[in-house]
Length: 153
Image (cartoon, rainbow, N blue to C red; front, side, top):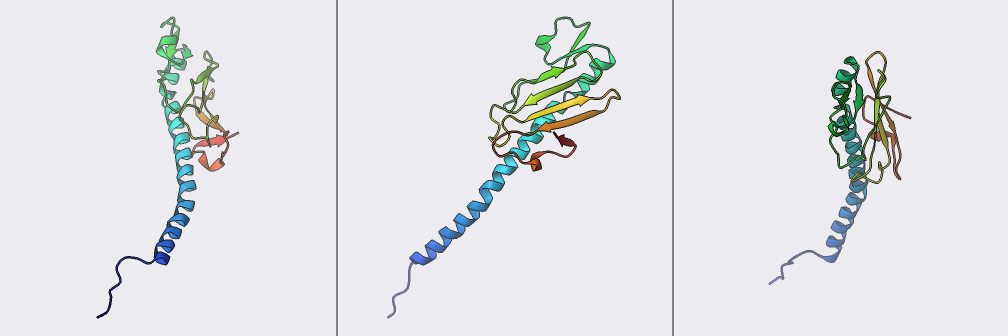
């Protein structure tokens, strides 16, 4: 009577562990890249959502402020309606009384190390068009993180 083999041999287990290690070595950096790119895209979306309020303020000739709490005179000031984000430090508004108003947010908080410190600027031109500019920073910044429609400085 023959003894039947039960279970796996040591070499079979070592081969499986080696394959899993190779797959992890490829997958983990790719995953980190996807996280960083999605965070940049999210911040661009959050800041771009303020365009409508900025457009209304400019057409009404009002000064643009970031939040409702910053409005001191509703007749002359309009809020962009910004709410806090776990990825952004508090954004700033430049040229709040001009038709070329812009606002800039810097990634901080819970942002990935590869994009922490990166700035995203949404700016209105005199013609009413909007531009998105990204200034990369962070320990592992890659230009591939920039979403479509934005440029790098």
